[in-house]
Amino acid sequence: MDTEIFITTEQFLYLLGVGFYLFFFGLFLRSLSWKWYADKNYWHRRPNLDLNKIKTLANQKRIELPFFSILVPARNESEVIANTIEHLASLNYPHDRYEIVVITDEKEILAKDKGSVTTQEVVENKIREFAKRENVPQLKHVTVPHDFNGRFRGHCVGHTIPSTKGRALNYGLAFVDRRTNICGFYDAESHPEADVLLYIALRWLQDPRDRIWQGPVFQVRNFYQVGVICKIVALYQALSHAWYLPILMKRLPFAGGTNLFVSRRLLERIGGYDHRALTEDLELGVRAYLETGVWTEYIPYYSTEQTPATFLAYFRQRLRWGSGHLQVYEKYRHAYYYPQEKREPIVKSLFWKGEGQWLFYQAAVLIPLILIFLNSQGLLDPSIVPESVRNVLKYLCLIYFLFTFGVYFRFRKLMNPAPFPVKIFGVVQLLALPVASFFMPLPFTTASIMKLLRRQPQVWVKTPRTKEATH
Image (tube, rainbow, N blue to C red; front, side, top):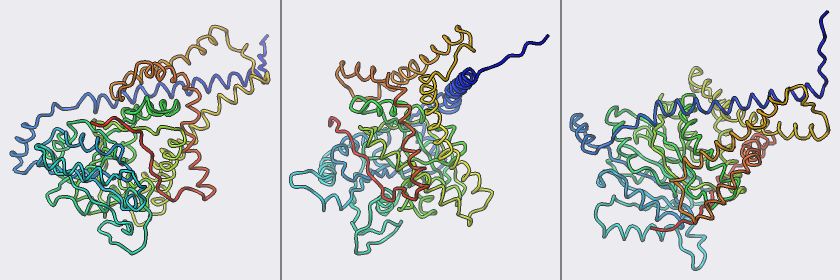
């Protein structure tokens, strides 16, 4: 005689919780496949770069080494811009084959407080210093007028125009050297790897067509100077750029606002940046593909940067990123003047790699809270699962913590020095991982909600920097 098995509601809910737990653990393990792909195709294939070999290749091709213009938008960046200029001036590339163009904003001068030092003053001091030094690239300084309309090859209109990064870059592009083949873009606190220009030069010499190259950005340099949630955000952002960004860029022509290189001719063909976009970088990558067919290429050369120091600063930065992503999605969802066969896959990727993914992960972090509540009300019955299995499930959570500590040690060498007690305290703070995991997707979820309410941000907001020791 068959015996019927009855499962109570409490037991069913517990099994459902276990199912969710194992499902998300499987998603976590999926990151190892990303690591395998990124290492196999990029990080383990970094060439041995040698300037003489690259010069030989240029001679064989009967063309000169590419000339780079590195553009650095810098509004209210007096605390960090000197370090960045020094770092960019020390890149491993002939100093007569690249220039640094720092783009400041006239509004900073107009709003200057008595006794304060402006970014313009710091940059001008550096220009005078460079004039007395040898083996440094040319350093230029241009200031965006308060009434510049923001367009590529635009003009002044006689009234103040809101500042955006795209507006500043469009203005700066008018001042690059006439010899420029490739424009590089870095934030005001970016410290790229020394050989990045050699790598881009090699790739361009191998195939001198119009191209876009995007490298990872590890926002961990000020790790010991930021709050607990921002510490965990910094580590996982860096890891995602090292492992996941190559996967993402198979589906989306992602271009970031820093550690980005674009052929000058391509920038001219597509009319520079969209000065109204909150994420002018992503918009540029999508538009470049739709108009010219150029797909952004991942490069395994990183740049270190700062992460926002407080959760509020993080929230505002990511809210702008999320809102900008949705802005780009809406723009190209209705851009029927582009071929449908090119536009539709991009629009779908923008949705699934944006709003769809954000809402999924926000829901994922809510599930543990729901299970905790149900358990507190006596609505979960774990007896349906053998005790030995339950013990294994408990210890699985340790893997998340061990993994996070492993990420810390992976990127530790890129962090600014700190006293030993500060370092220990920073490591201990990583135990707040469960709390941080709830807050990490919150800005992006907020962006989706604000879009539904038609209250999404319309103004570009600058992220405050952390002061660093000067060279």
